Length: 149
Image 1 (tube, rainbow, N blue to C red):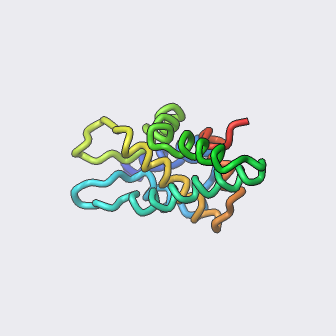
Image 2 (image 1 turned 60 degrees about the vertical axis):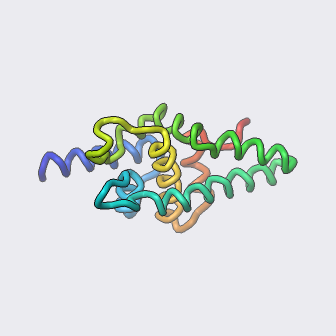
Image 3 (image 1 turned 90 degrees about the vertical axis):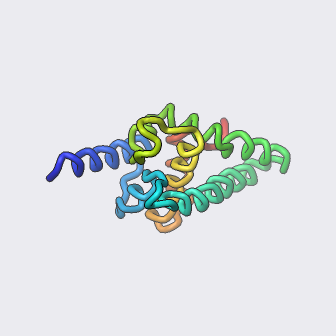
């Protein structure tokens, strides 16, 4: 096994430990952790698009369960699903170290791609779990993207 393969496997395992979710199909997670570059321009962008919607779905669902008002639900979505918050969660949990960086970015992960990666990870969990919302809620809780207590 090559050094690069071991490094990639380590990133996958680290991301699974951070999210507290073990993937059946690790290619979903690998795609979520892969930033766009000149060759692979879409990378995790489609997963991020789905993840954005799934995060909002989970937050709305929980707000309705708590009998929150529409205004309260919208406030929580504005806080917890914002790119700045998602990026902060990605950096603070160590997910930035798991990302497959591209050459154009060097060693720097910027907030926008970090937020997209968090969204993509949520989508990857959604897909890998057979669209199980309870499983997604657990990963979101591990990343502190859940409804505040």
